[in-house]
Structure formats: C-alpha cells, structure tokens
Image (cartoon, rainbow over all chains, first blue to last red; front, side):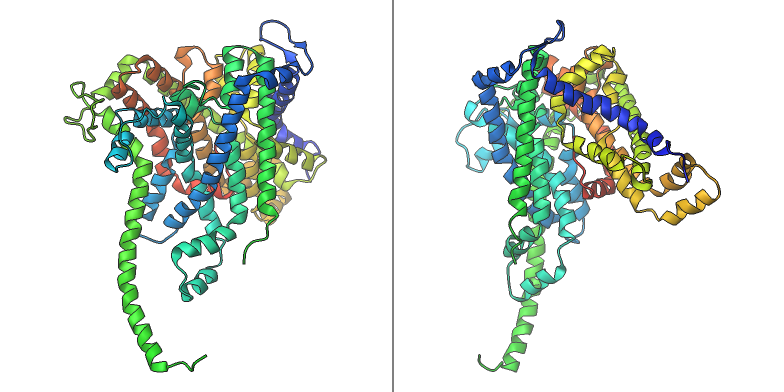
Amino acid sequence: MFPKFAPYAFLTPAMLIIGIFVLLPMIIALLISFSQYNMIEEAHFVGFDQYRRLIQDPFFWNALLNSLLYLVVVVPILSLAPIFLAVLVNRKLRGISVFRAIYYLPVVTSLVVTGLMWKWVYEENGVLNFILERLGLLNEPVAWLATPASSLFAVMVVTIWSGMGFYMVIYLAGLQSIPKALYETAELQGVSRFRQTIFITIPMLRPYIALVAVISSIAAMKVFEEVFIMTNGGPLSQTETLVFFVYQNAFIEFDMGYASAAGIALFAITFLFSIFNLMLLRDTTPAR
Amino acid sequence: MPPPNIRSSYEHIVFHRSRENMVSASRMFLRYVILILVACVFIGPFLWLLSTAMKSGSENIFQYPPEFIPHSPTLENFVRVFDALPFLTYFANSVFVAAIAVSCNLVFCSLAAYPLARMSFRGKNVIFLTLISTMILPFQLMMIPLYSIAVNLGLNNTFLGLIIPHACTAFGVFLMRQSFLTIPHQLEESALMEGVNRLQIWWHVMLPLVKPALATLAVFTFIGVWGDFLWPLIIIDDQTKFTLPLGVNRLAGAFAKDWRLVAAGAILSIIPTIVVFLFSQRFFISGALKGAVKG
C-alpha cells in the first residue's frame, strides 16, 4: 500500500517543531526549576531551593492569591454570562448576525489594543466615570486602575469583556443540540422565557459549561497582557498575577530558576483546577 | 377535575392569540433594545477610541464631562502616527510574520494530520495523544527555556525565532485530522489504484476537500499571530523588527499623554484583523464548534 516510512515522513516537520519548541522546553523548564540560572553563568543544581524560596516570598503569595481570586471571580462569570448572550443571539431576527459579530469583535482584537482602550475608558476623567455618575451609581470619579481596592477587579472586567464572545459561540453550538420539543412543552405550560433558560437551557448545556469552565480557567491563569499594559502590576502589586510574576523574575531579574519554579506552580494549579472543574460538572446527573 | 367547557376554552384561545400578537411585538421591541444595549458595551470602547483618535489638537481630550463627538473630526492623528514611529515598518513586519506563520501552519498541520487520520502505523496513538496533551501546556511556562533555546540557536532578534514556535500547533493538527476523517475512503482508494503516491493523494485529493478547515486554520492562526505580544516582547529587542503590538506598546510608552496619537496607532493596528474577521465570520463559528482555543 505505502512505504513503511511514509506516515513518519508526513509527521516529521510537526514532530520536530512541537518536539523542540514545546516538549523539550517543558522538560527543560522542570530542570531549570531545580537550578540556579541567570542565562550568563552555567546553571547549577540547587535541589528544591527555588521552591523553598517561593514559599517564603510574600510577593509570590500575593501573585498566587491574585491569580486565584482571578479564577474564582472570572471563571464563573465567563462560564455563565455567555449563555445568556448565546440565548439572546440564537434567534432568527433581522440583523442578528451583525449583533453576533459585534459581540465577537473583542475576541479578535489584540490584547495590547484592548488593554490601551480600556485604560482610556477607565481614565479618571473618562467615559466610564461619566456614565456611572449619570446613572447615579457614583458620586465622584474613581481612578479605577490606580486605586488598590478596585484595580484587580477593573482588570478582571477587561478579561471578561474580551472573552465573552468566544464562549458565546461555543454555547451557540451547544444550543443547537437541545431538542426543540423541550421548549415547546414548556411554552405550552406557560413557563416564562427566563425560567426556560434557567431550567432547560443551562442543565442541557452542562457538557459545554464544563468545556468553557476548563478553557476559561486556563485563560484566567494566563492573564498577562491586560496587566502589563494597564497597570504593570501596580498599584502596590495589587494586580500582579502569577504569569506577571514569572515574566518579571525571568526577563527583568533574569532569575530563571526561580521564575521556572513559579511557572511549574502555575502549571500545577491550572492542571488541578481543570480536573476539579471537569469532576464537578461530570458527577452530577443532568436535571430532568 | 371539572369537565372542560368547550366554548369558554375556545374563547380563551382567541383571546390568547390576539394578546400574544401584541405581546410578541412588544417582546420583539424589547429584544432589540437589549441587543443594542449589550452591543454598546462591546463596541462602546472601540467607538470611544475612534472618537479620541479623530479629535484635533485644539480639543481638550481630558475635559469632563467628556465630548463623545469630535468638534472638527480630523484624520491628522493617523498621519502623525507614521511620523512619530516607523509604523509602516511594523506593519510590514506583522504582515510578513503572519503570512509565514499561516503558511507554515497550513502545510505542517495538514501534513501531520493526514497519516493520523488515514494510515495505521506503529506509535500512532502515542504520537496523537502526545500532540493533544501539549495543548494544555501553558506557553508562559515554556517561554523561559524557549528563550534560552532560541538564544543558543542564535534565533533571538530574528523573525525565524519569532515565528518558529508558532509554525505548527497541536490545535491545527487536531483540526485538520478531524476534517480528514470526514472524507470518504473510496476517493483515496481509487487514486491508489491508479498508482498515485501518498504525497500526491494528500495534495490532489485530500487538501481540496478540506478547504473550509484550511480556511478556519488560516484565520485562527492569523488572528493569534497578529495579536501576539508576550513572545515578541521577549524575543525581539531590535526596534526595526517590531511587530504591530510591540509598536503600539512603544507608542503608548513614548507618547503616554498624547492619547489621540496612541488611539490612532491602536486603531491602525487592528484594521487588518477587523477586515479579516468581517470576511471570515463563518469560519470563526465553525472553528469554535470544533473546540478551538484562543491564544
């Protein structure tokens, strides 16, 4: 049929690239995390020293806490809110594709531009303060990004804003899989649209919610650009996330071993959180 | 249960119908109101950026309450961007990097996907599972060793170093494999009968049949590479090799107070993305259906 080497020949370029630039770095990262390495001098083995340093470093705990807070706030919102968005645009209405496109636009926008755009929106004399004051929600302008109490949440809003459209599309796919008969029955029994969403749509979307929870938690742990562009970790390290911590230690301090240890911690947390999400959403039987 | 009163239940239906028409008209109106309000949340920041970029130097952009519509709209800020920084170079760099990255992905991913979908050979499952599992590895963890590998290979500050980690993605291989699986076997078998080799089958038979998947992959890769910031930030120091996200970041750093200029530069940098997006919306939907992951 075909020569024995044929499949391997097809696979070679991909395996070389992914092997050298994904798998190899992964193994090296693990090795570096057990050594002292600054890119100039030879790396030398230090055992678990870097991990010990991490545990004693208040800045690491601060970054870890910020990242966990990020997970706890952003993931539930990004797992549920896009369902309503998907339901909203899942109708044959005139111009609906324009609305879908608008909701998706932030997803394709580079995060550098998104970050700058929102920095400008959050400006003390900016539009957000103006709108909130007009709506009577605010008495005086707030410097959203410069105030320690609000800065992390302000950054979270940007992450949520730029991710919503992506998850909306996943849920749109999920909505196609729900039998129409369920809604027809509910309609006959006079169940309101809102209650239909809560009691039919959301339970039926459970596998999709699991998928979105996993993807969005991985994304939440990777947050970097928003922080780098809008706050650079400030004020008072309030918006320093784990990835930002890794970046700073690796490429500003050139403390590669230490940064790698933090990176491994980041990976472990992401991995555990993904498994936790999958178990949480798999073990419960779908509601009737 | 009381016996059903036929007449009154009929009246009930008639009453219900006409009421429903009114309800559905007002419901329709309400739905558009909600759609538009939500749209404002998503497009508002873009419009505010555009408005700022079109304000002339005589207008105070920090005034409060803010002015939504520029007094005398101008395009001069867009011109000034090119004087302030070599934006044309950044633009050309971004186009070059994106074009190479997209081409590499199309070729390498579909090459690798073909045997994974269509041939049986030793180690197939191990290779496939290894590929798929790399999707969960965070780039942020790999960037440290990646940087040192790139430095050792002399790839720092080069486009090759910038592109090569993105030249083939596990997601792309997965996407192409899934679409190869949907092609009927007969097409390949009849080609094999005629003594055509596997590479020719891949090129002449398989690829033309998976054009939508190739388009999806191209669009996703383009958007990802065009907006990529962290890896270029690490690997590129030479300002003549900056891509647009680095250029916009530099603009924001150098002209921090001149938001008109920063806004104009930011808008210029996303125009190609928006154009590509508008012409390829359906591929985004189909890509996400297959479980695409951004970034």
